Image (cartoon, one colour):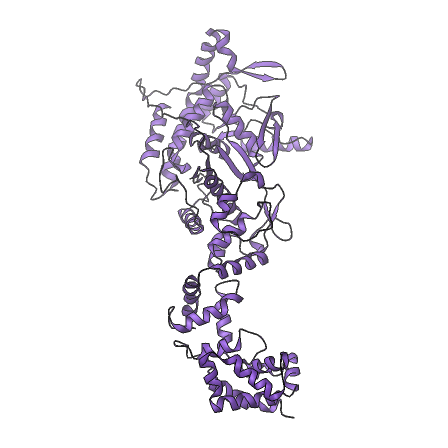
Length: 597
């Protein structure tokens, strides 16, 4: 077995992440070590029982398991493998739990099996805010032991999304740190050594149950209306029974021996006191028959050996805490302080999923949502600072964030509110940033020749106050440049304007253009003065004046200030698709039959 351990140590150290999920290299090491452990367990059991029998009572006491007041002797196994009489003895890894010096250490530990969901992004954000607020550190750990689903592409995409949000970490696969490796696929030797330690100390044992037997066990319990749990069949197996299965080459898992009659409690930062009775839990798997470690074992080992002091995660992980607490205690590792956040629900109160639209950070980024919007909005999904404030910058969030203000009620993801908030943050941007961001969209859509043209600056100024998504700027500007009078004259609302002696307004507009007064007023920025003069001449004011003038010059009943629209048409850099003032006047004349009585 020590030879197997050496193999897995070398594999973990030497294996390059160029192909991180290449199962052949990593699996072979795990499988070899698991088989070595299985192959030595009978010898280990027999040897250990002789040692236990010869040891003083004080030494034997920790090798006994409680069961309803009666203590049941168990036989921890020490496995030793030899090869042709020569022991291939490997040095143990020096596994240490970092001393706690008062520094808050939190982690975000995604599995690279898909895109970064907004729920995961909120978890990362809350951990980041807490670390920043407390002067602590955020650790990024990649939980990639699901070799069938984990991909390098998913990991890269999640890292990009986190970086786009500005959630930098202090330790992780890409930046290193004192307690790595920071990918679970590279920590196999650590898991194996600690699994052996649990076996050694009587907290774990090999289980040879087949899938069929486990299914039958579960069905029998369901028939009796009992909660399904492992019955502990192999927890008291004799050395002869174990040796017989080994001789057959029967695959085995390694299970944690759950102590009976105990209560495990945590003081959750969000939910208060939470507890579980161990009798509700059967002996659970630590290592699969393939040798790969199980999630709850890995997480407990990683959090302890990386010095994690606080675990902020979604409430769906609350049931896992019992198993993890048992592993911490058995290894004599200090438990972190837990905080379990409520789930994020869709507007229909179901779990947020793809059927509700975009759910990943990457999708929202591609749709034009701002980084600051996502941080602001996600921070309010389950947290508030006790005020009615809704718009925050990141510095404010860092200074105000605290776990005591995280609530237990589920948060609802409201796209309408997200859109509103994005519009607010667009309008809060410095003008030069607005022009650069929105201008890039206009150039891409062929609505501007360059980002730095006078036309682009004016177009952004006109549309920025009316959009919620950056991409919407293209449709807004396109609408400003068009003149859809012919298409709109049959609209019922517009007919009311046309029927109110629209002809006299149209005639005044045409006359103003032909005299040059209209163009001069636009050039001098005095359009409002010109239109007021028209109103005086026709004895019109208010809506009866401004709405028909808007229709005559823009072809529609709503939009930005008419004078600003006309100014945009003559700005340098206007696209060829723009319907200029002269063309609008000709179109206005052509539709005169619509209002001629």
